[in-house]
Image: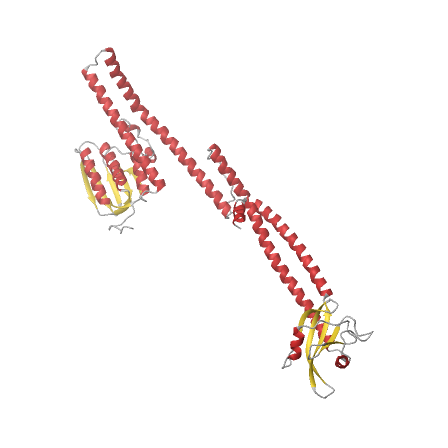
Length: 482
């Protein structure tokens, strides 16, 4: 049995479906056939019962029974008789059979006959199958009766009437053969139909399999499986999910390639400058021609600045990649005191812009986020405000009901550049001379999205830039989920 199950599990799905359909149809056909056979058998036996009852009620049967008892014999004693297809006999109290003269022959005496004769209370007639003395299968009706002996005493007897079952058995055998043939044809047809239906139903699955194999072989994520818009079955849903998955993977690959290209482009400039400066210093050492002190100092300062820019760029790339991995893999968010996070970012911003006036009006607010990433995002927003604020300028920070606003009084962002401020490596033409990697606001946007919020930049009334961060949360800290 286990071997058959293992063999079944190794079959293709369409073969398994065909076998299941054939098995289900076979079970149904078998149940219907058996039920039909028993119903027909019951009807035929009812007909035999009516004929036996009619024979038992034949006029003169009582007299014929008494004559049979008088001349008791186990074979017919008249040459010609009634019907010649019916068995008539009497069973005496001692179990002796007395065949009536017009009977076809005798019927073997059974225990049932004896029980009917010996019953103290007269019972109804009993019907059963038996065998005639000539070996013919018969349907028997035995009824209790009595007769007056010559001594005047009453004696119990049983009247037996039987009809041959040859015709009934032949009909039932023919019916069984017909049902068997019909069942076999039905099962074979059901198997063939099941195979055809399985092939038609699994055709989309075959297409899906071919598409997956094509992607695995060629890494071509542009392939799509056609799906009818109104279809809502499982295969259609699976096809839509596959199309969505390949689209997401293609977008992810495109973004990854774009990130690599952008990172390579951004890294090329500082690396080229570093290489040039280092080659100048190396050539000076190799040729023995010293570089003037001022020029050497400027070269070293340039090298230091480029190293700082590289470190900043690499740090931003690491942070951005960590955020993306967290978004895809599900980083564990924690309950964070947003007010405390903003205060920590403000302390760092004041160190970077000591000549600026930074005012803050912060109200309590608790959010779910990754603490260090959220603080880094707020620091990036404040860094931009510090970077573009005029000397001795003012930066206004406010936090109220989960809405953080940072307002500076710098030159502001041109309207045509606002749609690009959160793109990776994008930098305003007017700000390319300033230090930075162009990734700060991308990190801000990704971190805020992870926390379920939104961030925007706009031109402030009266000049400057207004950064707005909205995060869902509550005034009081929610209970931690264990």
